[in-house]
Every structure is written in C-alpha cells, then in structure tokens.
Image 1 (spheres, rainbow, N blue to C red):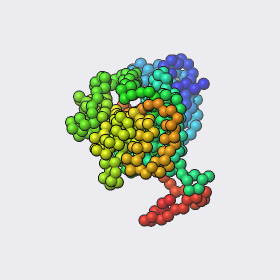
Image 2 (image 1 turned 60 degrees about the vertical axis):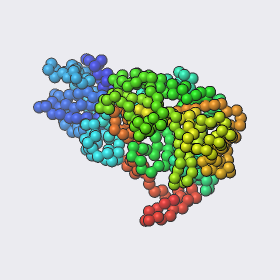
Image 3 (image 1 turned 135 degrees about the vertical axis):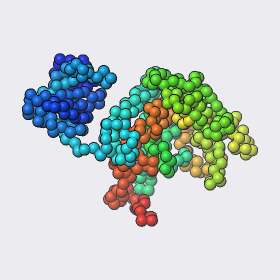
Image 4 (image 1 turned 180 degrees about the horizontal axis):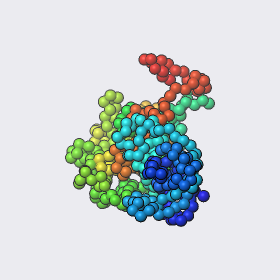
Amino acid sequence: MRTLTKDIGTKEGETVELFGWVDTRRDHGKLIFIDLRDMTGIVQVVFTPGDKELHAEAERLRPEWVVKITGSVARRPKGMENEKVANGLHEVTATVLQVITEAKTPPFDLGGDGREINEEVRMKYRYLDLRRPRMRNNLRMRANVNAFIREFLGSRGFTEIETPYISKSTPEGARDYLVPSRVYPGKFYALPQSPQQYKQLLMVAGLERYFQIVRCFRDEDTRGDRQPEFTQLDIEMSFTNQDEVMGLVEELMTQLVKKLYPEKHLSQTPFPRMSYKEAMERYNSDKPDIRKDKNDPNELAFLFVVDFPAFEWKETEKRWDAVHHPFTQPRVKDVEDFKAQFKNNPGAILADQYDLVLNGYEIAGGSIRIHNPALLQEVFEAMGNKHEEVLAKFGHMLEAFEYGVPPHGGIAPGLDRLMSILQNEPNIREVIAFPKTGDGRDLMMDAPSEVSEAQLKELHLKTEKNNGTKGI
C-alpha cells in the first residue's frame, strides 16, 4: 500500500512503498541520494552500494522521472538531521526501485518559484510549472477557500445550483462568446457573461437563497489582468436589502480570513463604507486602497463603495447606459418617478449598487434588482432600446416577473482576484490552473485554432479572408 511522504515520520522502522517524481539527485561517495516528491511533500531516499544492481539502476535516475520505491524508514544519522524541513529527521533506505516513466530535461528550472522565468514559456508548459510548490499551494488554498464558502453559505440556508453554460445572447455590457447551433442553422447560443438572469429567475422560482461558484465568459479586448473566462462566487437573495447583502459578504470574508489566513489582519472592522462621490473626490478612483501601510502584504483593507450613479453617458453611442447592469434598481419611487428623474437629469439618479474593494482592487460587485416589470421595461427603453427589441431580448424575464416576483438582490465576488491578493501574487494567472494570456490565447493547447472545413460545413458556417487572415 502506498505511503505518502507526509506520513514518513510515523513509519519509523517500517517498510514503505513510495510513488512520485525524482526532485533532485546527489552522489556522495558511494551513496546516492534522491529527494522524492509527491503531492504532500519531499522525502530523502538513500541507495547504498551493497546491492550493486539496485545501485546501478539508481545511477540512471534523473530529475522528474516517475518512480516507485520500496524501502525502510529510519532516522537520519546523527548530525545529518534537518529540523527546518518536513521529514528532516527521517530518510528511506531503498531496497527496490522501479522506473515507471523517464522524463526529458524540463525547459526551465522547476526548483525555484518561477518568477524569473518568461511567463509565456511557463504557460506553454503549464503542467510542468504547476509542479513547483508555490503553484501547488495556490491551487490547494483555492480549493480550501471554495470548500469554506460552500460550508459557510450552506449553513445559512443557501442552495448551490448550477445554471446553463449555453444560453441566449443578450446585451449585458460585454461582447458574448457565441456558439453556433448545428441543429438550428443560423442560430447561436452564447456563453454567459454571468448567471445574472438565471439567478433572478431562481428568485422568481421561490428558491430565495442561491449561490454558485461559476465560470463566466466575456469576449473583451486585451485588458491586462483579465481573462476571457473567470470564476465568481454568485450569490442571490430574496426579500433582502443592501445592508443585509453587504453584511453577509462581510461576515463571509472576515471568517474566511480568520480561518484560512490567520497570518493576515483586517485593517478595519466593520468594513468601512464610502460613497462613490467621496471615493472619486478623495482618491480619484472608485476602488481606493485605504491600507494604513501599503508595504504590508498581510494587511487587508476591505471597503464598501456605495451610492453609485445608475446611468452614465456613452459618447460614442450617444446614449445613456447602466453603470452596473440594466437590472440594477434605480433609487426611484415608481415608473412615473423614474420617467421624471430620467427626463430631468439621468446622471443624478443613484442606484442600489455596491462594490467590495480590497487593497485597491474591486473584488465584488452587486446590487438590489428591479423586480417591477414595468420599471424594467422603462429602463431598457431609456437606454435606447426599442420596445420590440426589449421584448425580443428580455421578454422571458418580463413575462416571468408577471407571475409573482419577490424583491431580491445579490453580489458576486471575483474569486481569481480575491485569491491573488490572499496568496500575495502579482496577478490572477498565478492562481488559475490553466490561464490564458492577456490577449486570450492558450499557449499550451494552441488555442484559438482553426477547425476543419467539414466542421464548418456541419455548422453551416463559411470563412472569409480578411487582411490575409481567416474570419468566420
């Protein structure tokens, strides 16, 4: 039965079977030492010259070979202990060695933290880059955070529900990724920019408290520390208000940090609140960094920014658009009050919108939603959509709201950004297993890539040449 390296200290005097990768190899006279690495750590293995065949086989070992080793666990000789590392008091004297697979020399050093290596090379060979302890720890801590979130929200009556990944293309602020339908020629699904409409429909369905750790997709132009696909914690609640939603996410973040990141400290509790107007006037930013010591990576300065304007002017399109999204509740009494305020000064209307900021980064955005179908229709039309267009794009929402919709709202923390801050990483790519470049390329899989003419024909698509490149 396999023994993990983390359990070696409890196996002194026993024979164990180990599986893993050769991390390093050292020859000291007639003795050969290797550090064997598995998912839990490293253990030193010794090959003595007594067994010539075994010793000769050990001489062949190279870094990153995958091996099985049988041997006996013993304390290291006096003076050779290393109490500063795990398993530093024990070693395994090998009696059997089986080389499972050999490995080519990696294209870069796997021993350090990898920060000095060209990032595109690391992304091309991501399966190797993930072997370094820093990267494995990032992914394990991310899994721990996900598990904590599920337990926290589950204990408070939330139901985790999956929503579709292929749905209808609707205008929600960013460009959709489109998926052509083979069965229905000329028609397309879209990958969700967020589960916005589905989570609101779940409130119509009476679920009342929903959450999901969900992938979202946005076909945006190159924007630095962004990804075409990202992960957010999606939360929606019925019969709620702004204070309740913010209070829930504050409790979540506070307890998460306390349990999983005890070395970090919160700058202020309760989390301070600041209006959008004050943030812009004082910091010229709607996501100010309010840390007392910006050189302290363990200081976490959470801040709620509230009182956002509901609408902003789009000069290129010559129209008013929603600052957050069109489902956000403007601070108006009713439809007539909205019409009057919008006619008088659209930019002065505030929204029940709130952002959670951490160390100068927006890590969550949320709002109370419009639950009056007449007001929702009016908001869409005020943003320049014709009545028929609104019905075509959002008729399903308007119809659902006619069957008894509760007041509701929610928030969606971005887990990639949150994890990069908690792990003291410079960007979100360091906490994503298989990230893409800033311009949306997957260097490891060589995507996006061309597809065969047969596939295009099956989907009823044709390619056109555009400046020497193919487009669909």
